[in-house]
Image 1: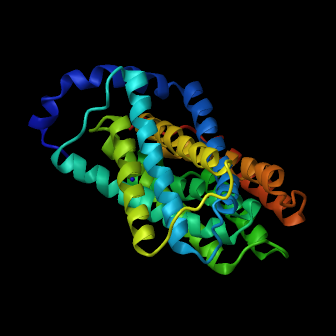
Image 2: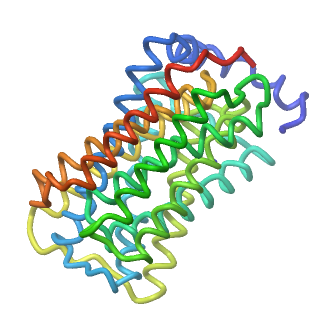
Length: 327
């Protein structure tokens, strides 16, 4: 998820407006609030996707239509990103060229197309509560990956290590407990989606240092969504809304992806990866609650509650660790 120095030097006017956003998102209190908001939106995506499957009459075995649904959502999200960039920067985000454009497309192929191929497959096979708890592993994967990528600047500490152990223990509880609400294939797909997302964070951070954050996010969603949609339609999939509520749900999902990806890109650009990754705590909590409200899924199961407690304790412990040094 480098351009030559001569080419970078040719774009100094483009840095003015984004620099104010960068300074804003680098404020610790702002980063905390925005990270919580971002993860709350992503936590709400799972139950809305399951609702979308019902409203578009897509079943778990209809992989082509699942890909179409995902692809259209992200292409709509890309349009919203460009409009958001226009609103905040009072101009359309500047398009990158050459290797920077290739990097944005490659990021879209990995962070959007690959991640959401696994994610949308998992949604069809898991309950919202189980999927949300499994998806929270991306927080711990991000912390572990940051240690190997950034060394002393974002190193693993004993509190972080203990937090990761608690988090993964929560995942074991929910997956090994009775009545978990999902298939082995769904569990594996969600864990793969979380791994792809965690690995794309540092990549996204590197690309947004060279390219306007809105441009990165827009191209990421547009290219990844286009790949998903083309593959889905080529395989014979399609979208067949069953009621007027289907389109609003698709638009809500597009809004979640657009705002969530923009916030995430700005947060990753201006903060240590581990500091932001830990707020994945919000995802399973919002996911479990909304799955119960929107889709009538059970809320009070011992393994759900125990797993949530362990995951939340792990993320809090990681977040209480000493702040990493500035890179």
